[in-house]
Amino acid sequence: MPQFLPGVAALTGRQEWFVMNTTVLFEARARVLHDLDARGLAGAAAVSALEDAMTERGWWVEQWPEGKAYVAGLVAQDVQDLLFDGEAAARWPVCTSCPPESPVHSLHITPDLGGPDPIWVCEESGDAVAPLGAL
Image (cartoon, rainbow, N blue to C red):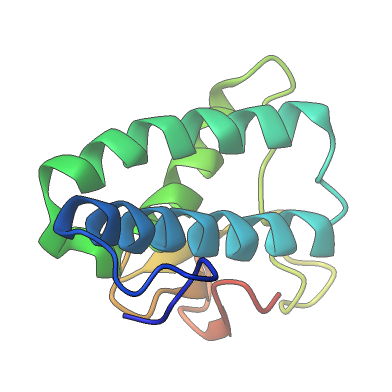
C-alpha cells in the first residue's frame, strides 16, 4: 500500500480497508458525475441523487467488499432510477446515437449487475455506446 501520509510508514488493516473502499466509491462518483455532466444533467437534483446512491452503496460495499468491481455500474443504475422516479422524471442518459426520428430512449448499463467494466448500451439497438465515465 502506498504511503499516504508523510512520516507514516504503513496503514493498519482497518485504515487500508477504509482507503480502498473510499477510493472505489469516489471513483464511481467521478465516473457517474462525468456522464451526468456530459449530458448536461449535473444540476442539484442529479447530484443529490448521486449522493443518495453513494450513501447506499457505501453501506453495500462495506457488507460485501468483494463486490467493489460492481459499485460504479450499480451507482449509475441507482442514479438512473432516482432521476426517473423523481419529481422531474428525467431520463438519463438519453441515447444520442440513434437517428433523430427514433423515439426518445435511454441507455442502460451492462452487465445488469453493474460490472465489472460497465458500459452504456442503447436500449433500442443494443449497441455499446461508451464505457461508464466516458460519455
